[in-house]
Length: 357
Image (cartoon, rainbow, N blue to C red; front, side):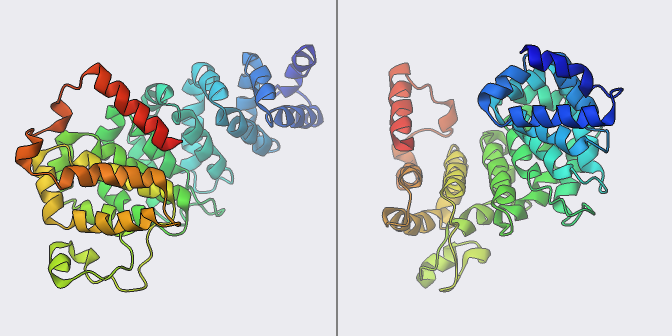
């Protein structure tokens, strides 16, 4: 700790460049372990100095990488949000927005890291929303492929959008019907170039589906989210004419070359999106009428195969269990309004934990 205190002055913007380089290299080395991160975050002056150096071109790369590594651990992310977020969020935002910035990808990762823990989202989002049209402008960066002139891909904006949509305030921005942000992001649910980008878009969609007040809009002709959810879950299985007639046009007669989403985490989020859409009677009826059960029936067979995943299988069975019941059997218009006894909640949580294992 004493040795760390000694190098803090050399991390100052006023210190000689060679001393800054050596000191920052030492800090970067410490960020390679959880113990090192815990040591670093105890020194607020050091953290502020590192943040200052992110705008010094000669050492910016190492400084930003220090923040990426520190915030990758929840203990580091928590301290950074507590001590630096008011300054850090605008700096990171401007760097991502700058199409000439060479470190935009690293800054995207920092923003993604500090919004991953649910208990930090609201505080980070508050600083983002204090910047006029911040999420709208970041969406433009994300949807314009090759936006950055130095080949930064900005893929980690996807998980950032997913993270901030854990908050109602974040979901409200993406569900604003005037700006149409969600509609612009939906195509990335099928993005083949990056699992990070694709997974972020799917996570955003799942979080938006959590709000039953927007289900009617999500399933409307304007948004039509169901094909975006079902298409990655569909495989090359041949379906009869009657089933194809029920399916959305994008899912009809897919052919033998159709590939199912290969990442189980993404498949799980897509199935969980369907589960959320089953919350209301209108949603359940819509899903049944548009071939959701038939797609899940084939997915269930796949998840039972050696290529499948037990956690996804459990999620599929939960949705199928709802869809095969009649509305009379279900007996509730909105399942989210049901009061679940504490002992039943505990049992459900225990079953979920077992499924995860």
